Length: 402
Image (cartoon, rainbow, N blue to C red):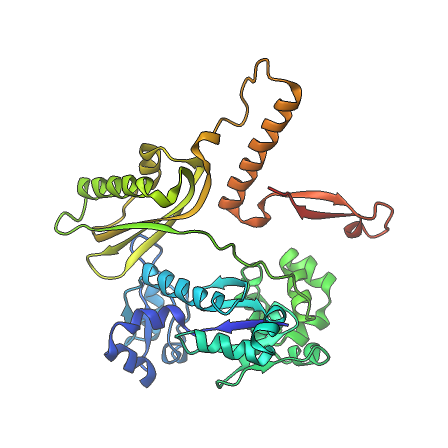
């Protein structure tokens, strides 16, 4: 059974959490929204229920949102604070023994079957998850990820909703198609489906998978599978060792001063004993802004490196005056002594050594591609049933082992 943990309006709650007045206004029904980030498209972030009642929704253009709700209060967004709060929540779930798949700030999944021996039962695992979190969460459970999400969104109290596999499909049929907006692959479908008059997942199923595939492509086929109670397996996150360095900028908050501070952070990070000579594959640069809020940018290097000048050049691009900078390692590469070009002239080295060396370098290249584009970025075709009449059964895609 898969458990879904949903913290409603997580980004908005984090933005309002520092001010008790704003937190009280949120509870009192004040129209609030997260302001657009500096240097990004002018669209509002998460909005409160009162703002939704005025027709304001997340992702709406700022001018349209203010026109629909003139009394809308904009809170400065802080991706750094949101990321830190969500990472704390992930650590809390992992502390009960759960292997977690984070689907975004405020939404995560984990498999409860492996926790029965630790917490006694599924209800015990859910209670442990709720007790570990510092945020009030809605929790649902079901046979698939999408079913668990639908159950969590239907909860209106602290009591979790657990769906039995026998009644899942019938229960899902009455759910709104807006649930598809919580999946990145189907996020664009609720609006056109609404224009077609499709309001529930049951109506979506009755359209048929071929018709949905013809109209919406792979997203339509996936939407039909989800509405039928089918879904893929969880993709739990890898627990990586994390190193970080931070520095207050003070009065020198822009221009060349920020570049020098960034160089100091890179040197400090590379000098940490915990690095153990390993290269850096991906890093995160974040900043607190003078005007409030902050920004956060994840950078994946073209190859795993430990050259401070190359790292510094890859991280340049500070968009606004900042009062503090922080640099953290997201993923490590192999030790620097093992780094070479992918294709070198190997000279008189034996054929077996050439093959071994090339295999090592190709594994490193695969790991770098996955750091950039995710775990599904490097797959191989495996013949399963070449004589099958169904094309999809002849060959399947499987991850390439590193």
